[in-house]
Length: 191
Image (tube, rainbow, N blue to C red):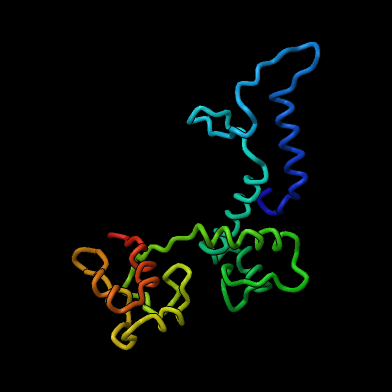
């Protein structure tokens, strides 16, 4: 389940088998159905902890996509990068021609991984302003959104160094509103 997208009908079938095991009844036995199968709550909040296998499969595949982003020096990442996204990243990768089923499965959750990503600015002295650091903004979009592009070089120019907070007035003055909101929503890593 962590490498291949299971067909939806198979997940539904397996969910049905699980439900029949827990909520079965026949003429000779009477059982009480304490919760409906739709109530898939974690045990910690009173549920039975039974998971939807389709969602679980997608979560496992997202974990693989996440590792392609954050463990880019792993052997698997090197192999996939060489074959599918040589001059980019997992987030910008295309499906490619004749992809393996494993790659097709991991690539299918790329949008979910993108939605869940959130940038955190750590060592801001080495991050150029016009690079990939604002979620869902390309460097070109940052450049076109900036009113005075020549006055900025590093992300650290947008931060109060002593406070470790955004210089809100500078960000809102230099960038158009949607980009400024995106920048200000990024949490800063405080050393």
